[in-house]
Image 1 (cartoon, rainbow, N blue to C red):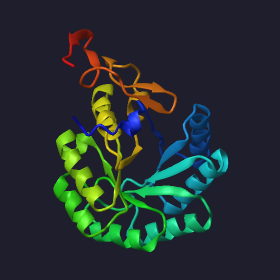
Image 2 (image 1 turned 180 degrees about the vertical axis):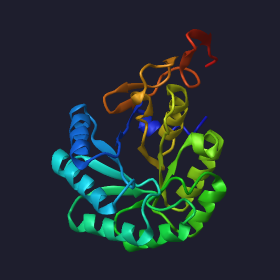
Image 3 (image 1 turned 45 degrees about the vertical axis):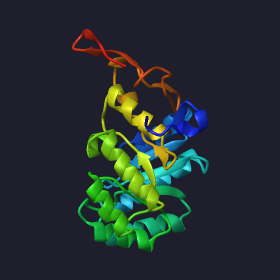
Image 4 (image 1 turned 90 degrees about the vertical axis):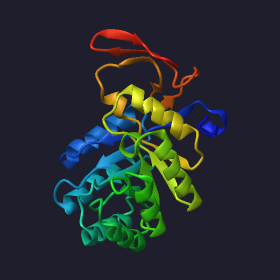
Length: 251
């Protein structure tokens, strides 16, 4: 129903794992732990304080995990245009090998996104700048970014996500499908959507791993850094557990 690509029949996709903003030493220690747990892609949060300290954070993580682990940076709108350009270029010169930088400036600053995208080699991804297909159209029309992060909870579900991905694919822009702090239910829906689209090449589905318990029977499951899609009808959810009770869910 969603396109059927599913990575040429494979039932697993690889997720990254998020490193929260802390002191460089603590973040590098967290990075080593996640790599030890099998994750080969790290999404590093920055943008909370001084941008030079952010560079130190990224350098500490790269030094700790070595060259074979992918590092994605999520600035969460925390940088200004000129400092973002300076920081990204400095990290390029340092050979930190950053896969992408997500939402370096404020969501409304599409001009700023374009200036950064045009000034650096590292791919720039839009997240908070795109809540709707109309937002995506404007960003794509202006060629303001290299990549788009689609979140079902942000854009309004699979139908709107489909519209955004189609526009991006027509413009030659690859997409990532991400998640906020969400349950297995919504991330299962996002994983099905993401796995069915060839233009979606990156996956950020670590949110359920941060929960203390699974609120469903069925749905996606995790095998280290891999998200396994269920081989059942619909989303593959058998039952939903809520407030201590179990409700049968249609599949």
